[in-house]
Image 1 (tube, rainbow, N blue to C red):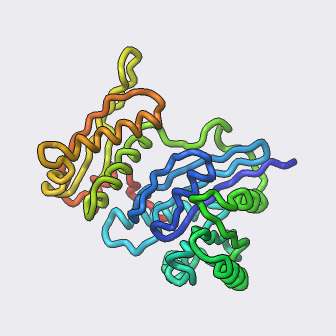
Image 2 (cartoon, helix red, strand yellow):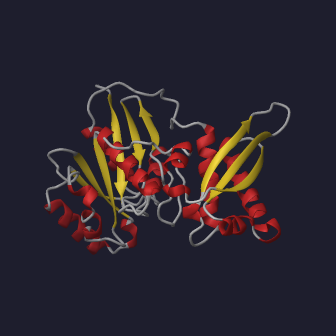
Image 3 (cartoon, rainbow, N blue to C red):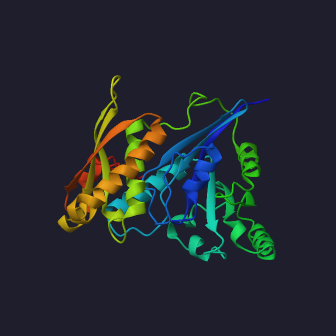
Length: 303
């Protein structure tokens, strides 16, 4: 049997379940998830290997109309993923956007939705949240558009119909070798995942503008044989008032964050760590080209 391989970009509006789908397909959590939009900021690469195929998934930020430089770079990450992809998985939240109008009216998707140029699999996610007759109607409707290589109802959360999705992807992939060793599921290092775990806990614990104004940087990561690993993380915010909220009265908020984040990091690394959290203010960092570059966002994301 020929070996197949290729890149598969996961696209959709914010909160359609893209990261939940990636984690479910890989069978382990590598992408942070949250009900708040804009949880994913950078392209995350996940690798699913089998003796007959290797699928390289690209989890992308939710598609939106950018309001500031960080969001422009997020959309640049989506564009790069589309450029690299052999197949696009386009997710629709059937509970919130059953007609697909909100999704298809995004200018970013106009050129992508040309079936002659791209292999596109439409995924009707959260299918478990609607009635069966409505699900059948939606499936027939989207299939009748003849814009997609396949239309598949799924529930990423319940891991429903994902076997069929993988079979469909493999059928559409080109023949090719494995690009990554078969025993790895991601190409990022531990620093990246630790910073994302801390940011996920910030999303969970803080409200309003705080999660969107926060970036997490790992300034030190020391593995120690005779004691706990030492990790020092900087929580970057835009204003002094946000710093005060992160810290909380008497340091209670950041103490709670540290406890929850440390446990999650230890669960991920499978070893004990000493986690130090510090808060720094970098005014308007989301619109500062130099700071965004320091934080790992590409200076040029256009293809």
